[in-house]
Image 1: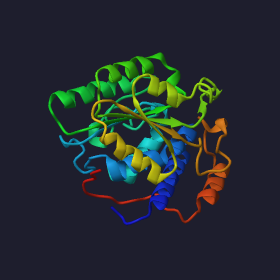
Image 2: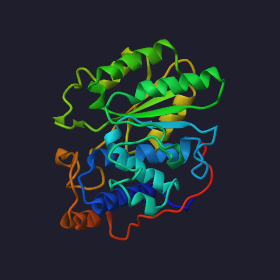
Image 3: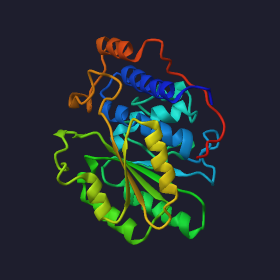
Image 4: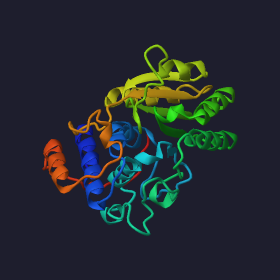
Amino acid sequence: MINTSFEESCARVRRIIVDTAFRCGQSAHIGGSLSMVELLNTLFSDVLSHRPHEPQWDGRDIFILSKGHAVLGYLAVLHHFGYFDAEKLATFQTNGSDLIAHPVKKVALGIESSNGSLGQGLAYGIGIALGMRKRKQDRRVYVLLGDGECNEGSVWESAASASEMGVGNLTAIIDENGFRNDGPNATYTNRIALTNIWRAFGWNVINVDGHDHHQILSALQQAKEVADMPTAIVARTVKGRGLPFMENNNDWHHNRITGTIYEECLKALGESTGSELETEGEFRG
């Protein structure tokens, strides 16, 4: 992998997100893609066992993007780590492409699950994690959810089941950016914190700043040490992170980047920030 700092790496991913959204010429889920950059970058660079040039490697850990509408951020990270080239990424949201507005499972591209309807990824992850356990495999499953997604009842049915079965090789990462499609996510307040709800369902719960590399990495490493219960990492993030006019602005939950806005994005990110990154090898947390 090219030697670059974590901050530079995240800046490159954000540039890839912006470039791809602009070039596709259509609306995309940008705000929620930008909020999870540090979470995914930490996971793929330091924790997840994976081989970008051997994506179907039997020893790999599994990542599932349950908040599937934020697929643009996921695809940017997969490209950044070498799962496919810029030419492939440029087909995002074009006719006949494998890379559409929500994930469609294609392990050869690093996409481990199909997700459109919210609230499905955690249950899918439980099944995979149980299969790994039954086969006595030293592998883990990571599921990234949105805080708005946690309004889905299926999330809590899955949370209860994972706790009851002691699925210790499962980690849920909650991107708590405070918004959902229709505005602020007011379901969870300081009085009824999301953290407390996960803990009440029998999970090991860790709170982090979702943009702090060291906090995220520490939490993911701690999760590996808990064998008898699943871990939920509740990561407080900023929707639209990295682009000041998008931050905490839910107009950018799903929107289109025009030429004028693209220029504004480049100024915010720094026009010298590249969008291409060559990577190779095996990553092991």
